[in-house]
Amino acid sequence: MSNNTKDSELPHVAFIGLGAMGWHMASHLPKVCKTVKVWNRNFEKAQQHAQSFGTIAVNLQEAVQADIIFSCLPTSADVENLIARVSLKAGSIWVDCTSGIPSSACRLAEKLKKLNIDYLDAPVSGQTIGAENGTLTVMLAGHYDACLRAKPFIQAFADLIEYVGESGSGFAVKAVNNSLMAVNLWAAAEGLSILKAQQVDLAAALNCINHSSGRSGMSETIVAQRILNGAFDRSFALNLLQKDMGIAIDLMRRSQLELQVLQTTHACYDLIKTTDAASMDFSAAIQRLEQDTGYKLRF
Ligand code: NDP
Image (tube, rainbow, N blue to C red):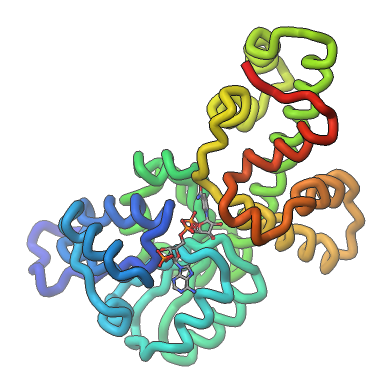
């Protein structure tokens, strides 16, 4: 963007949904645009955000008048309900960072296109620490030109922005990614259960695994940071992971595939009731395995 661009010509940006992820993601936007408006259902959070990061807390109708509107809500249903409540501005781009449902992305892209608005599915990965550091991975999908226009703003909180295809493809990649994460975490915990039963020191075993071919992103981070220390700090709610796995299983069925590992792992995480899962970190699902085996995985 040229230095000669007048402030009045700069795109106005808004962020909707200041939760565990959105709070940090929106905090980076003032680096790339002068005016960042924020809205949150619990409005006090928006006011706190404005105080902390120099954003502007506004009502929902004002937020959706921005040129680029980001959202990061729990589910596609939340985004669809919210969009149904507001009047949008022609020519804007809606960048939905929710981990959502591919068919919802197609429906919203079609609906908003009639209003001359581009809807992009842009789910993110990298946990709250990635959001805080501005190093997220973004799986971007939808109209290609709109993706190019939105990219400089997404860059504020991302290290990798990958264009993955037409509407819905971003949500599909995210659902599969999180299912792989769930498989890796459960598999690592099962392996460590065997080692615990064999009275092997778990810290030493994990160190070997993390320098060997059995390692994964989960064994390298979450296993030590949330399970072996017994912390289970809530950062990514278990019910949200259950939702992501459900989306992947639904895509699997629509693709007429029967995939054993994904289905079995989904069933393991689904043993915990959604109502309980909302207040638990996803890592706490491993406590269910610990109950079944009788072995607690701790340092
Ligand atoms: P949180 O539960 O922490 O935050 C949810 C946000 O959405 C809050 O701002 C909440 O507002 C708002 N909200 C909830 N329901 C509604 C509604 N019906 N209408 C309007 N606003 C609503 O979730 P996360 O930030 O953890 O997750 C957001 C999305 O990002 C999810 O799709 C998740 O799967 C995905 N994700 C999460 C990661 C993580 O590590 N946490 C990592 C990568 C992706 P209020 O404050 O009023 O409750």
